[in-house]
Length: 279
Image 1 (cartoon, helix red, strand yellow):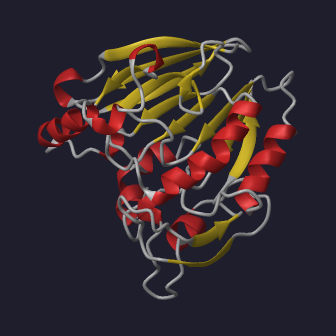
Image 2 (cartoon, rainbow, N blue to C red):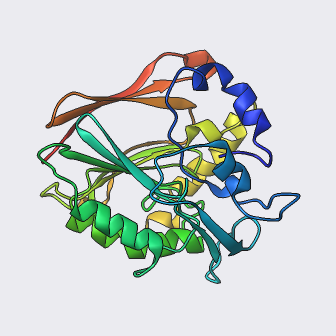
């Protein structure tokens, strides 16, 4: 996600972005209005060139995003860099926008449905979705934001029906990895998605200890009251460390996922090294 004009983001990551493919999704800080045109998502749309299905439509919406509110966040940003898909090796990747309409009949919903129905799993047996806001998280933060509830209610049935393998997200500045989950219940047949929250990069390393204390406290409060016993959906979580993920798609059956710590005192340590199985 980019703060306002995005210059700081590109300055920071210039070395990496000049040599490494970078396929983003829009986050809450990309919503901000342009200071001249007053359009939403202008920085995000103008600075990237994703595999578009058609030119962007960005017409309306409120500035920034709601907090824990049922009033809803209403905006229009479709096509362009808003949502798109591409294939690489064994994987079809689907990138989505948490901050546009996802209800049945909307452009994004139709895009997701059409894309999932037309994937040839004999060619790309893995399907991985990325969106900024998490459907499942052990942390209280952002759980009841309107766009989170809307996208989960609308799109999760499609993810389950068409056997999406993994859904990556951010927004919460922490880490978690779920079991296979279908509509709020653990799927022991393992045909429903895994949900991986990888929001560590959003933490300020200078205040990580103070921030992590609050998140850790939130992790054990009423945010988990819908899950208990054998239905608890999370295999691992870490609110404290800064880290990044390295994903190695080995073949049609296995993905290796390593979480590498970047916290100064632990830099390079492997916090988690797991294999994902394509059931």
